[in-house]
Length: 294
Image 1 (spheres, rainbow, N blue to C red):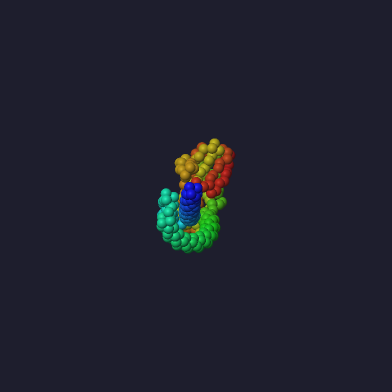
Image 2 (image 1 turned 135 degrees about the vertical axis):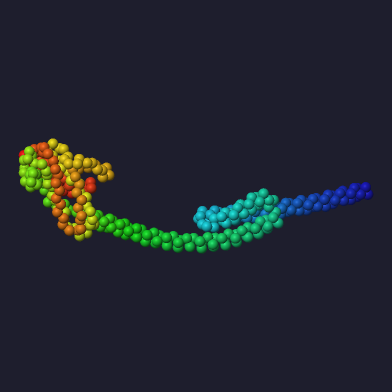
């Protein structure tokens, strides 16, 4: 009897231990399942967070590229890019639970839609800028052609002006000089002896010119003797950087027709040798000749 009672107790204890073991196994299995489930949730949440961050980074890169286009919308694009950057910073600092992820994903979708609208506007602006650039290039070509044509016209006008100016210049010809002896009676006798001469007569002709300006013309006559002395007034006048010492001036009333000019230069003690006679229109030499006295 005692052995039977002992066996019964042992069996009861074994049964209880078996029940406890099964319970422990069930509890451990549940804990393991919960841990795996929790790990799966955490992993999934982390992956979703990374996906949203990746989408936001791509959105930010799109704005960077659009801003680099340097359109008139740059300020608005920069403002939207800052919103994306702020959302990225907030998401990185968040716990990343499902509720907050849903909120950030909704904000991302709103920003993405805003980005698409802005990109459409940017594309329209780029197309308009391309058209303007093409038109501007065409205008530049036309302006460049006009500039070249104007330069040709200016060159032609300058050449024409030079031709007209050259054509307006009066031609002085037949410059002659002769020495004379003045008689007491007033009669003048031509001589080539220096000792007998007491005046020089200089004559020249101004040719007809229909396009020259009419009016009074002043000529400066310079007579240089054999000793390189300027005879007559020996007056000096400047024309710009050039100075001229002359013997006398003669004023001619010119009316576009041929004019003969004759002037006399009194003197005494004329030197023997060769004399030089120059006629100037202001500072420009227009005629020259020489003669000799013996």
